[in-house]
Image (tube, rainbow, N blue to C red; front, side, top):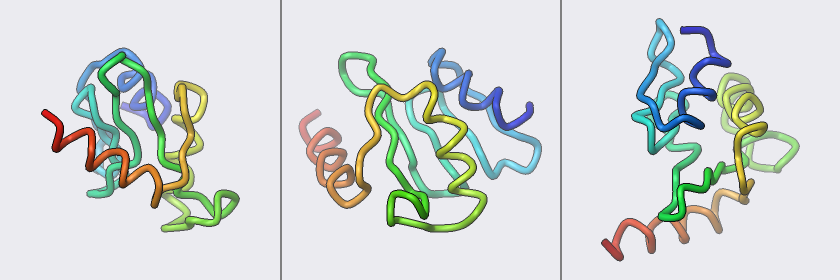
Length: 94
C-alpha cells in the first residue's frame, strides 16, 4: 500500500501497512515505525499526535510526513506530551 492509503485505512478502522512496515495501522492505532502517532478513542474519533517540526515535537522527516498524511483524517491534533498523558489514562481505564 502507498503511504496515503495507510491513513485512509486508519480512518476506516482497517489494518494496513506499507511495504517497508514503517507506517502502519491495526485499524485502531496509527504508527510511524514503533511510535504511536494516533489512536481511535471510545467515540470512534481519530486523535493524532503532532510529531512535526511545526508542532515543535520533531522526531524525523518520515514521522512528520506520516503525521501530515493523517492530519486530514484526524478529529483532534494534540501536542504529544499532553496527548501521551491522555492516552495513558485511556489505556489504563479499561
